[in-house]
Image (cartoon, rainbow, N blue to C red; front, side):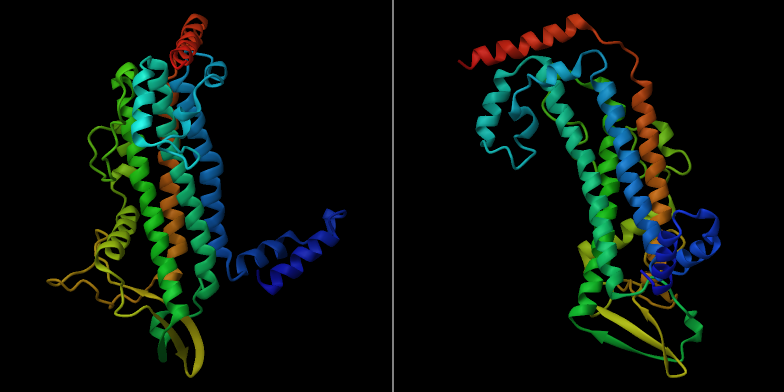
Length: 356
């Protein structure tokens, strides 16, 4: 937090009992001038996505999946292995023992809840990756700035450094792209599950229909509204860029010959600290010539560009998650069936008796 922002916040606390004396214009100016302001904007959006959009999706899925039963009563009787085994470290049985338990639990109530927790784990994975991106952002911008004082054409000289600090900056930067692009894969699974929900026979449930699905904008087995402009599956350019960065790091190695950070100067005075990323074409791919795909003519200062990239991509994530919530809500048309709830609870009780 910058010195100016600290002083203004102190002033605000001092005058908290006299709002008329507080200079809100000065406060807002201080916030926007803080060196980490662009990063804090990103983090706020990411936190909102996890705490509001994702929680709304959780609720919409649960309300849809259990709309015809009393969820609280049924889940209170559900065996613990249904939630934990094969998903959580709290489960400790072998794969073979899990299969034995599952064979004895042949009623559709078990299939429905096994599916519920598998889908739940995917949503939890999205939240985990959002938290990872936040953590990587905070660590990265302790090493490099997120604002530039000059345009690239103003630099008159510079030097490059390679060492532990520079390697850490590159690793954190690439980790952001890997974690963020992973969210696209997970949302693709949720999109398939929403579309295919009515295709399950939970008495014979074996695995999720999205098990082997990875993100691509042209998925056919998803609801058409998820391919509307502004959605993840409409092939947004910013999403393509994130995928390109992720794939390059995972499959081809680092962007630079070494993990370098460039320290620029203007007329002998220190200017900006920069990490450069390769040239990109208008489709979000790296510019290539044969097997060479790391040209640097565009002066892409990725540490400066990244906050805006994350804000743009996160806006698309929020719209897509909210649309998934809406689609599940449209499928929620039944009222609670007391007889079905009792039938499910009896099936669970009978399962416990079979174990004796």
